[in-house]
Image 1 (cartoon, rainbow, N blue to C red):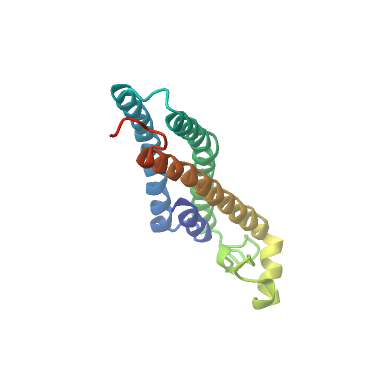
Image 2 (image 1 turned 90 degrees about the horizontal axis):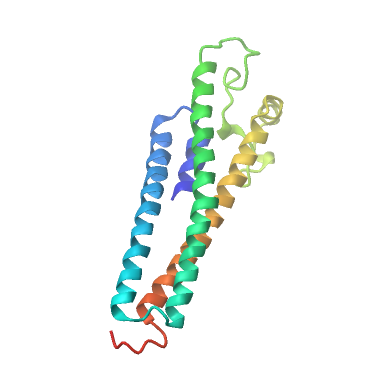
Length: 182
């Protein structure tokens, strides 16, 4: 849920509601990662009590859980942290530029926002040429495209994490080859 929230917050710099949603989702993911460690510890104790620590299905589940933890720790959380920094910086830059009333003062002063820029969802031909030119001159189009690409990459990485975690869940329910009868 974080990537679309980050896209919305980046599309509306300074909008506290959008930034707040992204911030809450970022915190939830951090708490989720800490609770995920407790699940692993609890799982080891449960597997030990059931005497299944050497079972192949459990070793595969442990390996996939470790891989999911690496994806979370080294790909998802840092990408979310970087996007949150960018959301905060965009809001601060918009607040700082709000007092600039000169027509040459930047994209905010010219009435441009990130919503005016061409993206994959809104091709250039659907915008007035003057707005596209002004957006390109301001440099905002480049940062919008980069942020959009980063949120899409984060969504893909989160999907990989979810697939790993779902596979572990299926292994824990089906327990292929388990002889415990539990």
